Image (cartoon, rainbow, N blue to C red; front, side):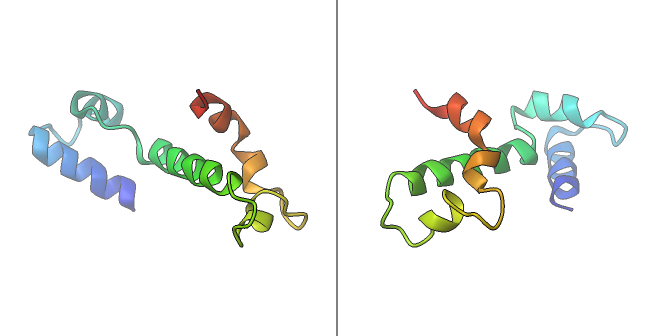
Length: 83
């Protein structure tokens, strides 16, 4: 739903036709897809939590045994973001 709203808003702001490919209008507007923005925000959050082990969320995100930890799922993005 949010992708649809973003695409409509960008089309309106650029004056693009409805038939314009989404990838093209995102490129012209210099906007990354929302899925990539979500991954980036998740990765930033994980790195922030990983720095402080006393944080109450640390065990759920970094060391969880119930589900595959979010940290493990995002490792390839985390490696890209570390300097």
